Image (cartoon, rainbow, N blue to C red):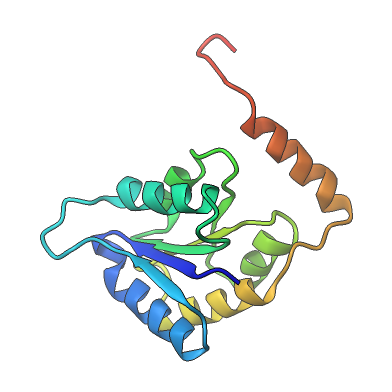
Length: 153
């Protein structure tokens, strides 16, 4: 497996660091995408760098952390081919992979605590795309990536 990207904005820095340490302890290679102490990087900046790295096949999976997880998911999903899911429970973490083949897990540092975040990461990493009826839906998502919308569409 390629290294897992772990990224955050300033709000998610502490939790992202804990996630990265947890993954390293489990033997995963990690590349961190985090802002410096006096950086003006916001969640769109970090999500953009990580999403580009996935599209360019540097990573297969990524974990992004901001205050709610929502901003990271919205920003990451702007990139064709990226499927990012913000989750707060283990069922959603599993389904993000099994049903939607999400390569990006988004967490909210103000929503989930450390213990739950690590559990969500473990469930997500242990899950793989299940195929079956979800394959048809995933193909439709991929077709949406190819569309260009205008205000008149």
